[in-house]
Length: 56
Length: 555
Picture 1 (tube, each protein chain N blue to C red):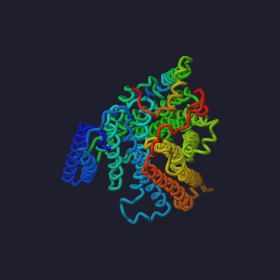
Picture 2 (cartoon, chains in turn green, brown):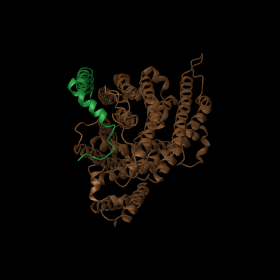
Picture 3 (tube, rainbow over the protein chains, first blue to last red):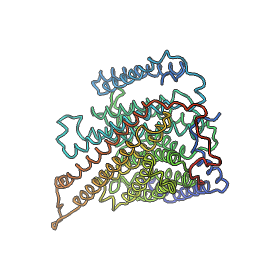
Picture 4 (cartoon, helix red, strand yellow):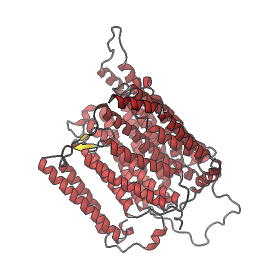
């Protein structure tokens, strides 16, 4: 049981930090990627008028 | 409603309800053999299936709906969901105010077991969180997923299964507490059979959402859908893991948790805090990111910030639960981990609150004139306040003062009244006229009255509990010269009494506002739809007039 606990702590304190940093970097790069800008702007604008009918 | 279903779907409803009735009878029979409370819940399930069966049978022989309906959005379950949600709001807040008075005047239990605080309190929390909040999330998610995907719901049967099946879970939960059925896990009180039923309902819900998204005509999945999906997916994981239990008998209500000791406590608060995160935050952020820009007719201030905030909330919240167990047998490093992540959570939380307010920047005249939008703005403010407070309270020395006191109650209610309820009312006031094709709500004045009652009620409630909680915490830790406690527990009770009365009055104001909202929504629905204007009787479009007011790039 002791070994398991120590392993978990070591894992959380070392690898845990880096995988969170990597995920944060991935999210930031996706959000700030210049090529995505137009797509995001369009997505934000398009919901303003969507009450009519489903598209076919 | 039933006439909108095909004959095939009506038959499927009959089969499901008949199976449910058989399960109910079996539960009642097995429970009766052991003299177990399962008998009562068997009859509840049976009665529920019969009550739902009545409208299905009544509409069974109605003609098939026209095929043209498939070219429209499917809004019937959304409408029913809004009404059910408002019924739960009145019930849950009514019981909440009842227990508030009960705390001020404990003799009001009248010596009955069902009316004790320990049984009524989960009736209140389940009624408002799962009944009101859950039904509102299901209804609005059906709306948002269709509109942002520009696609009709994937089928007509499963939305009803999800919405009505979820009501059965809530009814089993609430009726169980009153007769003493609970597994004693906060916000996860229902016993094993109700938990299994919720898993079935929730999996159908997730599949319905994914199938509708798969049919989408708009290639980009709008960010509100991500929040709703996180809500559905993570709540499924949390619910299953925290409710892992072994029933003492399949013919009885009692079960034992698969975890024990500090692991059980950690699992429970991993669940408990993520219920706050993904039920009371992620789902309602989905609401905010759709209804606020739409009502303001302005795109969200920064779509990028909404994405960064989404991943921040999903990554960080998962680790924050251990701050509920400061100064317990939980290992110190786990407590520190929870505290650290709770502090980091302030960043994505304020991204969302700031994004909402920045969207309204430049449209303050609309906020002034439109109470529905003001509900949403106030919700964003309370979201920012209570997430700041939450991060602060997770710091261990602060928690030493706040934990187990009414400060926690103040914090929770700043969140659920100020944030969750206000954003829901704002969304409903926008949604009801759209869905029922009315020009506006029956009475804009009553929307105003509701807004000010809700705001006043929340402020009175929260300030009363802040005062009460901090006084309570300080009295508990005051030592005299000989090193013993200065105040007895009874002394603290007497000191809190006036605040308890103030809290109950605040709750009463909030409840009154909700009743007014019910009346207003009901009258909006009942008002006949405006006649279509004769052809040609419309003003000519102004040349070059911009469509959305004050358009701005989503940057």
